[in-house]
Image 1: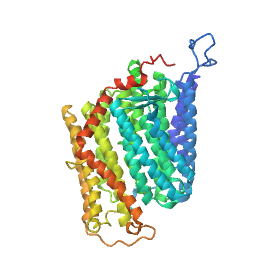
Image 2: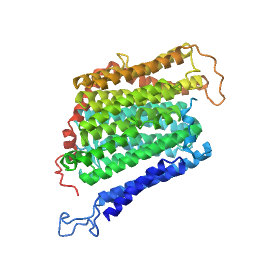
Image 3: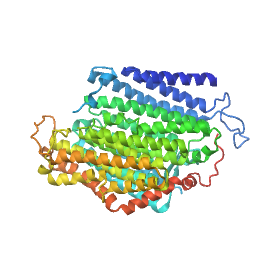
Image 4: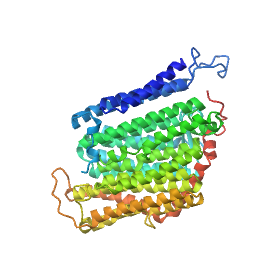
Length: 117
Length: 509
């Protein structure tokens, strides 16, 4: 399972960066989304994967003695997903707006900010 | 010591933003609420600073979850100084916005978003938890995205594509670094990490994580070679927004770099040299970039990059004196850069253009205003009694003590380039005989504005210039603050003790 997840993380990062290096705006956003998902799975992977051991303390004990699934990475991922959802929604609207205003989705054509006003 | 009230600067900005939303359609009311809120926020920040200055480091455990398990907020001198500077710049920009931002922008929620941005900044300065820092960063960038695109003009949209992309990429890299750090140390509390990192066997992976943090924060603070988004976007929004971006947003990245690289990762020889070289090239790239610009706001944008290099150089030298010098520079830079962009907005309102080739004769037509604008311009260069000078003295002295002659050479070169750029701006904009410019229909000129609006643009510049003069003329007080911060950063044991206290940190899962 760890190996599979590691490969998936690598693939997501690689394809995300590849997509970001393309000139099209839409591919840029897809690249960002893939990268974000890669990071989320990386947090999950590095929080150690433990199956079927919920972090619940038994009535008779004060602390957890056995190995258990760490809930913190899941909280982190949840936060990161919510944040990246908001940011991606904004980015998609921005791309749509940019296409309307500039009239192209080719990043090489977007040089207006580098010219003298 | 525990103090529940250190979260106030954050909560108060949130409160102001919510109140502003209730006045969504009432533009005048929004302006007054924003200004009033900023004044109270300044009061809170002064209170926080004086409390921390007299009483030491205060902490707050969110939800009473003891560190290192819960989210901790920490107010040490470094954080509270930056909160104070945020409040000062926030007040200035809020007043300036009331005078200069167009109604159609205010109609779409300019002021609430502005206060949410300030909330994010205060949160980022006060948090003691690395993942919480990430969350505050996201709040800052989403607010800045909205402020940058508000209005939807063509250059704004193009600039923000670059800005949004690079900031999202920086966030992903930051998140990746946090993931690896959590995997290695099993903790997110910065004080706890500071204790745990040296015990990790796999120091190679720790260094990789450090470099990931360096890249993530490097994009945010616009260091060489990651700065290209900054001059492409900072000159596109209205001047009030550029002012808060130029003054504070890149400095959050610098703050995070200082925090992470003094508390969690202590730079080894390789990382230290890397940071020094980055600083050197940042100074060079920013300075040379500023030389060739004719748009004053683009010239100032490149100067931001150049001066980020000075602060990073302090981190690269890594002695107490160098850190204190860099902190002094940070304090000086926040006020001056905010002021410079406000000045550029003022110049635009008077002349109707940002291109310095077409301007001229400002000194002849507005002599008093020109003298006022001279204060931030000359402090930026660091002409002796003014504020930029003292910071550089410390940096150069620290460089001599550690034999970092390359860094010293580039700091001097960077100052010279700044001098050249500012002299050129002064000659072109203020002294040169100005041709009569054709009046533009869509620009509302300064002399056409109502009296109240004119004062709303002048007062913030006066306020920030007064702060700059104080930093320059009352330098011994600022030096005392900078030295305390330098000592705190180089020896984080007080910080760690304040956060973890006697809670007896058992091993986190």
